[in-house]
Length: 74
Image (cartoon, rainbow, N blue to C red; front, side, top):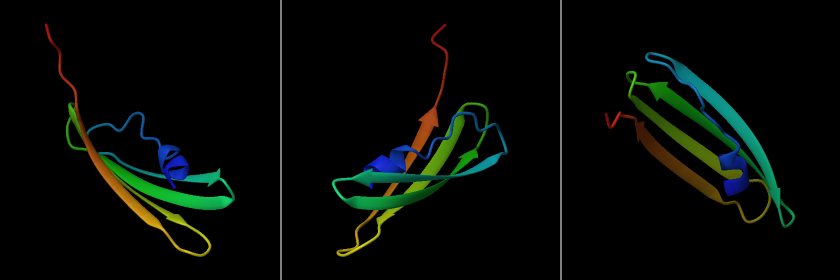
């Protein structure tokens, strides 16, 4: 699942933009798919959420979210 989730990448999401991504992964005989969404709150603040699930038996799900804040030190 984490292989799929890590492939959902949100490089440049500008203020007011929404980005949607998807990823797939394979590990030790299991396949997973992941989807995610990101939003640029302002020039310095971005938020995102991701979901991943494994096909097959048993079914596993994973979710994650994060915030990125950038600033200058000078």
